[in-house]
Amino acid sequence: MGTERPPAPAPQRKVSLGGRVVLKVLLFVLLAGLAMRLLVGPSAYFLQPTASPDAAALVAAAPARERSAGDRAPAIDDTTVCNLISATLFGATDTGPLTALDKKQVSQEGGIPRRHFITFCISLYENYLSLCMCIRLNFPDLPDIFIIHFILCNWPHEYFNAAESCNLFHGEWVPHSAGPAYTNASCRFIESPQNCMTNGRPDTSYLYWRWKPYGCDIPSFDSKRFLDGMQGKHWALIGDSILRNHVQSLLCLLSKVEDPTEVYHDKVFRSRRWHFPSHNFTVSLVWAPFLVKAEIFEDENGVSSSEPQLHLDVLEPNWTKQWESFDYVVISTGQWFFKTAIYLENETVIGCHSCQNRNLTETTFEYSFRKSLSEVFQFITSAPHKPVVFYRTWAPSHFENGEWFSGGTCNRTLPFKPGEAGDREQDNIMWRIEGEEFNKAVGNKERRNAHHLKLLDTFELSLLRPDGHSGPYRTYHPYEKGNTKKIQNDCLHWCLPGPIDAWNDIIMQMLAKD
Image (cartoon, rainbow, N blue to C red; front, side, top):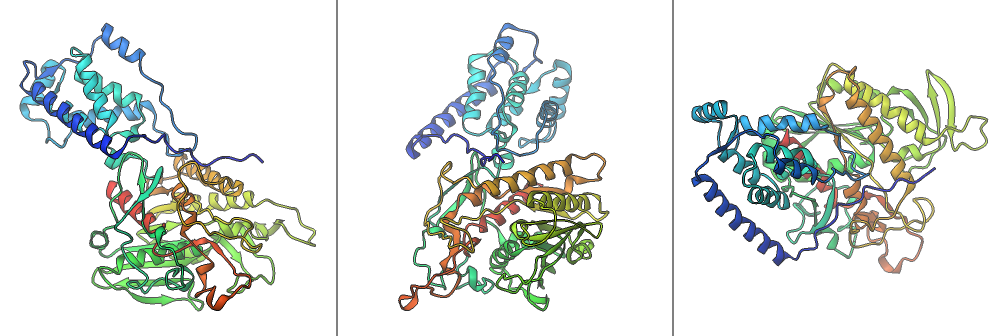
């Protein structure tokens, strides 16, 4: 089977910090001067575009729009993008709604207020702001509305209003001297296998990075703002041990404002619930490693006494029975599908993945993963209750020189730079399947109200952090007293604090945008 590479990072600007400052100062001076010229100039409005040589030449010079092969953001067609123009120009803007005089002049002259053109240009990001101004300077007779139409319809929409609409999932890790929002000493929710500092990890550089999308910044998670906005709400994180890892990160951040009380746990502490009484806010962790119904026969160390049995057409009732109580959901699955397992549909065995000494049809993990996701998305999009649902994409592991049970290690201490990450075929296969099934779910018009289903695509930012795993420090001081015996490395779960704190930053930004 062919290998599909992770999304290629956008070309990085090779501009020094000083160069960036100078560039922005020049752009500011240019914009300020031009704004004054435009505001006090003889014409406050331009008419709508007509067929002119200048306009035709500009269109002919427009570059074709391109999108990275790995960019799986939902496609927006030209009509949808260009329809944004009317909202941008004739609705409420940062400079306020159109005045009665504006509306009268727009109606009579067919143009737009000059102040709205300037607002539009200011809303663009870096090179696109300068592009807006350069077109105006080089084509002085070209109508404002034509320039706006040209830019909106010939460049990817992610570059506009960058602080709000850039691709949050495509970027790089940059140094962050301030460090994490909490520590192993300040948070009591970090479980031992993820408590790398307490367990003796000697390096700390992995703590001083932050995720920066190309074209914008993501604010740090604001615990107070989050809790204030979630009064009376119930969040559920549904899935496997990576979701448990994520819950610990979220609780560490929120406990800076209010320390929650655990109000429920099952017998083995896999499903749990916490309550923040001052905000009447609840966080639930629901254990459902396959999301579909499964009989699992293994101990706490992951040693199986028999193959798991997966009912690929029946969802795990642990989460579906609670569905109507949830207001927000983060849901995911993944690594468990690599396990040897027997598959059933309609209560009938249809095959088995990697079973030994069983006379069963070999069935691939790709099939079981796709079938399970299809059932999950079918439920989410068709259920009458519509919580906001974030489907979190595949969390790649970073084992080198082996895997979990074959001596794999992860000893790196720095993030990968864009383009450095290795190509693990299984990771790419699973990530691709997730994208395909998600797009089917949100694009199926027969399913009701899929707008509440959102893609939390953390694959790329996680792929670039081989340094963020527990590694040998999943246990307390593994090399203590010169221990030289074989040490189990965990290159799947994440140190806390660590890279997955950025997942919460992104979730909060997605909530703010909505």
